[in-house]
Image 1 (cartoon, rainbow, N blue to C red):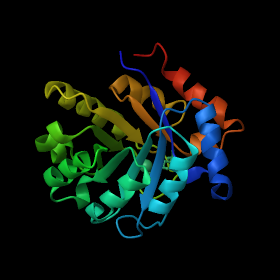
Image 2 (image 1 turned 120 degrees about the vertical axis):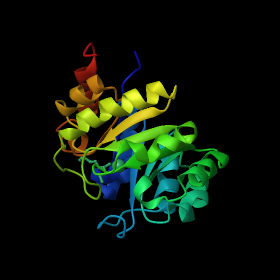
Image 3 (image 1 turned 90 degrees about the vertical axis):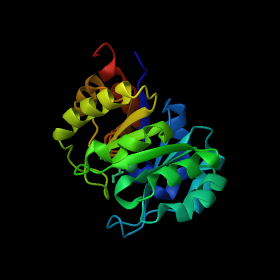
Length: 222
Ligand code: DX5
Ligand code: ZN
């Protein structure tokens, strides 16, 4: 059985003390740091760019899992990898040349991920699975933290698990949006292995303990 990976999203962190927040996450045994980049075009919201990734890179040795919610994501590949991104995940909805784009991310030395909105079918990635290191199933419509988990995502994750297994893919299967102690268990049982959590971690009285609680919620629940 694979191990559970918890990737807290710094979107819900206190930006005035971002460095300390990241140090706290590392101390609390987070596996990855999830970084939500939004451009105000693919999604209504605006967040951060290469400068913030560089700042995070200086404060932690943890992998930086960069989720690009932007149009024309290829414009940022070089800068973000140079800034210290470990993996770049692009949205299939705005990546008409997924084959070339995923190949380029790998060429730069980062892990190549594809994200699917709730309304986007799994077939959008079927032809590029050999180039995909990570498949991200969005369980909310991207753009904001703290939204409610879309239930239909559980069944989609189960189908994604089957698709990856059938293709012999060892890609990470990540889920993002509305993950908490309850929803994580269903997603884990459906076959996801990596869980983004923003609000659940940062709204908790003890964010470090919440990371452990999320991880423990999955223990022995295959
Ligand atoms: C949503 C982002 C998520 C978000 C998750 O557009 O991609 O990573 O931070 O936040 P929660 O866990 O609060 O839904
Ligand atoms: Zn995200």
